[in-house]
Length: 158
Image (cartoon, rainbow, N blue to C red):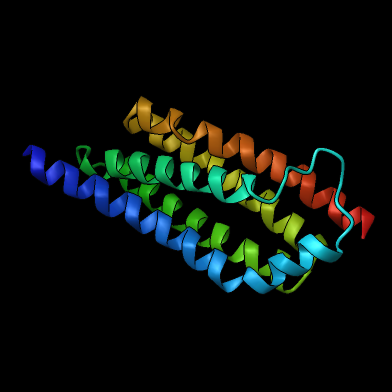
């Protein structure tokens, strides 16, 4: 594939996933402020600045991985992987709204379990097409596992 075209594809996928994260952050800014000020947080809750930094990195890794899959030879596994990528990205976006804006911590936790399963499936499918693309999603799975702990504890403490 022509190098300039490759970089455009990477750029589009990274920008697209970062845009999802930015829109989610924008739409939940009021709920996030309320969360920071009023909600009882569990032990190991990181400082607020950690979240946007980590998410920016994770969205970039998601975009790079999805771009690698997009540029791979067409196959059913590739198609399934890209479909799961899109679904998990939508679930990721909606989780923030459920958690921060609706403050539905129990439902958000169940939603996060579903997201975690989709991420695991995405890693498997991506890995079948391109091992690097699959491995790039592992930090995302680890972070969502940690987010699951935080979400569950917030639910229990509040």
